[in-house]
Amino acid sequence: MAIRIDGKALAAKVKAQVREEAALLPRKIGLAVILVGENPASKVYVAGKEKDCAECGIQSFPHKLPAETTQEELLGLIGVLNADPAVDGILVQLPLPDGLDEGEVINAIAPHKDVDCFHPVNVGKMSIGRPAFLPCTPAGCMEMLKEYGIHVSGKRCVVLGRSNIVGKPMAMLLTAADGTVTVCHSRTKDLAAITREADILVSAIGKTGAVTADMVKEGAVVIDVAMNRDENGKLCGDVDFAAVEAKASYITPVPGGVGPMTRAMLMRNLLTAAKAHLA
Ligand code: NAP
Image 1 (cartoon, rainbow, N blue to C red):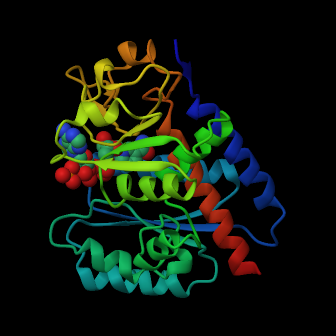
Image 2 (image 1 turned 90 degrees about the vertical axis):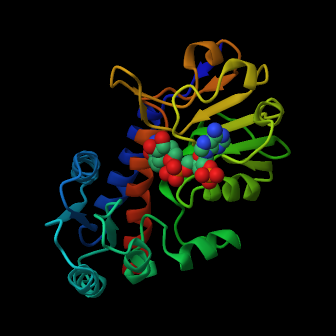
């Protein structure tokens, strides 16, 4: 039976460390959070981030804009926040309403305030092993591996999904930690044959039940990034948890695994940004 990786407990520990270090700085750390429109899931995520900021002694500056906001207005606000010395990080909650250009918006954020690590400059720095920030979800996965003493070096790692925010950076961080990494996606042939080779399997597909026990090697470490809803509306991951738990050595639950860690790593990035701004 696998050991359950407790993302909630580790996130609390990371946030406590951030709070402690933040309290030593000469001014409050500031996060500007931009929410455009009324997407209910986005509202929940933003509320969670504001709560985390309060817990860590970080000032949040909410900017709740109507869905009709134009690209120019949004870019104008980002320009103002880029120049505001009280703002260490700028977070634009995605997805943006139709008609707004996400790529252009991300590019407009000053890289030194890009605490999500989505800006091409920061993605590039990470890819050459000189990161300014690490993207929150993959960094949270790496932190969990570290906390549980799971060594990546020399391991066969399989990442399911190749998105810019999860799959690709996850593969980069595992590679940087000396794992031997295979990235799979919707066009991958004979997926199960590849996943069965994994010592460390990270799933970020977004489909309930996509990872079944027959796809997992005995003793593998299984990290489930996905946040899906089952037929009863309950939060769940990609992994068939009960069956895979019986086979894996370590496994992350959903909820209580990667989700809280993603939020905690944002707080850590804010601390990193503030320290650089104050240096
Ligand atoms: P995404 O952009 O939709 O990417 C999904 C990836 O899965 C794509 O690369 C896709 O391949 C691949 N895929 C789809 N079906 C597949 C299959 N049958 N076999 C193998 N690969 C398949 O999603 P995302 O933004 O990366 O998010 C993935 C999941 O993680 C979602 O459930 C999301 O809610 C969750 N998430 C959680 C957190 C957290 O904090 N826990 C943070 C971010 C995201 P193609 O590229 O070929 O289309």
